[in-house]
Amino acid sequence: MKLDAPLKAGEVALVGAGPGAASLLTLAAARLIADCDIIVHDALVSDEVLAMAAVSTEMIPAGKRGGRASANQSDICEMLVALAQAGKRVVRLKGGDPFVFGRGGEEVKALATGGIRFRIIPGITAGVAAPAMAGIPVTDRSVNATLAFLTGHEASDKSRMDWQALVKAFPVLVFYMGAKNLSAICHSLLQAGLDGKTPVAIIHAATTDDEKTTVGSIQAASDGYLQAQSPAIVIIGDVVASRTIWRDK
Ligand code: SAH
Image (tube, rainbow, N blue to C red; front, side, top):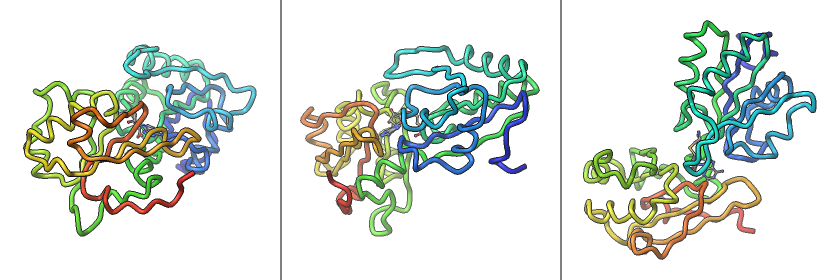
């Protein structure tokens, strides 16, 4: 099956919308967004991407922002199944990649269980796009042979993270949803033995007009001197020092 073939009636496409800039959509994403009956989208999907929908397309906002639930996950799954059963051609649009901290797996399971025809279109994930916009290589062969993507959402819950094991195994840590817990995250890393001088970069709203990058040390971040505003990617490790600024305003 061609990924960018027109949707059939009753079919759902789970589509990654990328980090924000419409120019970073895949061709399949752009084609399906422009030609469907209904778009069910997350709060993080940019206006620029949503504007690519046809005027006749029904737009349904669903998903969470900053911990505030605007729709329950099982309600979203049920809605997708019901829309498909009604014969609609549905695009389920999620920020970044649908399977990276995006609950795409749960939605796909619901569609498969419901006997719905579906396809999956990957997107550029923020954990890769945001560092690139800031000129930070997520791997640098002089720094790291491993790379960890983590959620900072549960970082304050000590039971969910083995900080010492993390620091030992991964020279570079990329946190999604890390803005709120930034100082707690950096405090935990310091306690786990990471050098206080280790650089951290906070990249807010990458690829949008609001993009902003802040750089400091994990000691400064732990002490509360670095500000982070959601949505932001927090990248910690010596690759931040390998930064080449290429698109400052
Ligand atoms: N599925 C998404 C991630 C969803 S979790 C993806 O693959 O990118 C939501 C988190 O993604 C935010 O809290 C933030 O950490 C990150 N994020 C998404 N878009 C972003 C952007 N444009 N700039 C910086 N961070 C972003």
